Length: 247
Image (cartoon, rainbow, N blue to C red; front, side):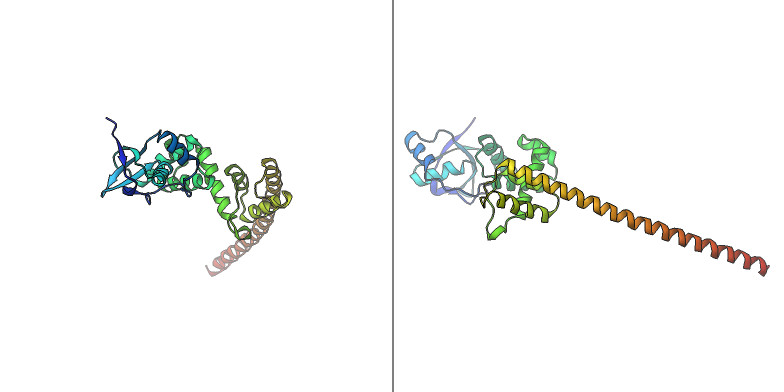
């Protein structure tokens, strides 16, 4: 039997783990709830006389702002990784997460399960999707100190830059995209694609140049090995002649 309770706002543990970095909700959601009530209950459980929220942080915050009880379905306590899964699934379906919150939550699950397929199965996404989101966070963090401020980039845009293998190339490509877009960090996809494609070509050339360099070093080592083997043969022959004379 599903149990729905009215939770007094003062009993709610708002420090309960939440994948959202922005929680404030005193605007449209609060206005809607004031007019129509809380249409969808949250989920959580009681712990040491405090209520821990699994899902519904924004609704709970709006209830606190309005001074009304928070409606919640009571469930058994969840571990932190499973709590992240609950929140991810709910917010992915609603498309309600900031890109960086989505990325960090997926990385949290990756740290727990260590496998793209396992994480994807748990939140209803493909391993490729998980890999893209993780790559997006990697490039976002690698560019975090751009001009002293964290760049504002959509996940899809960050993922494009994340396709570049070299940190310096990612930074240089991002700077070039900003320059072409006249300083705006809200980058059009086509512009990002063109810049990334150009830098990918440069990366391929760099790899080809490195391969050529390694091939040259290999040739030198092969020649050196041949010289060493010839010297070994000469020494072996001399040892054999000396051994025969000694007998």
